[in-house]
Amino acid sequence: MKRILLDHIKQYWVIYLTLSCVYVAGGIFGAVGVSALGPEKASELGIFFDNLLVDQPKDIDSVFLQQLAKDSFIMMAGIWILGMTVIGTPLVYLIVFSRGFIFGFTIAFIIHMKKLMGLGLVLLSMFFPSLIAIPCLLLGAGLATIFSFLLLQGKTNGESLRKDFLYYCVASLCISLGAVAAGVLQGYFSIVGIRFFGF
Image (cartoon, rainbow, N blue to C red; front, side):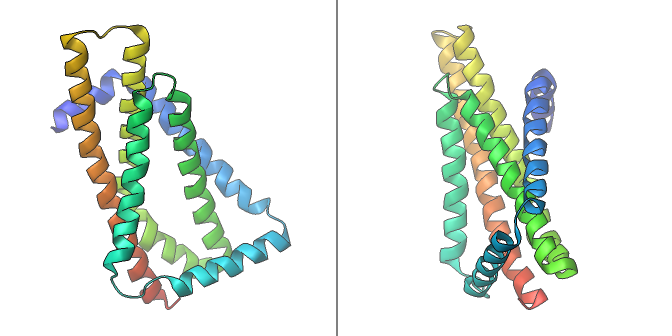
């Protein structure tokens, strides 16, 4: 499995490099966006964030974890569907950029509001799940882009099309399960982080 994955990435490295750059660009814009907030907007978001911390479960809540898992699956399913529309590739890149923007903005804002405590919360609640979530996002987006290009270029037809479609579906499902697991982990670690830092 590892060998297949490495060969796949090596074959389509340009696509994955482009997606990675788009994600990083989104993260940079998100982080810079925090500094662009005015005092009033920053105060409003700070109040919202504090309320969010208060409302978030302090103990393991299956409903909370299931919602995060559902959100992750819906996002990956949306990317999968866009991969079959041929013209959906720009939207796939937009999703990757927006996820990077949200990630960068969230990290920068939490650290800006909570200083060292915020840095600790980010490291505990976001860093470890992101080691799974980000690769799953990029792999899912890469598969969708590759399949769209195959359809656009007309290189697949008949048996070849069915084979490529089956591969696309199975690979996307496996990656989606990884994204779901990352969503659950993020929920678990966020609960642990909030309890640990006493928010």
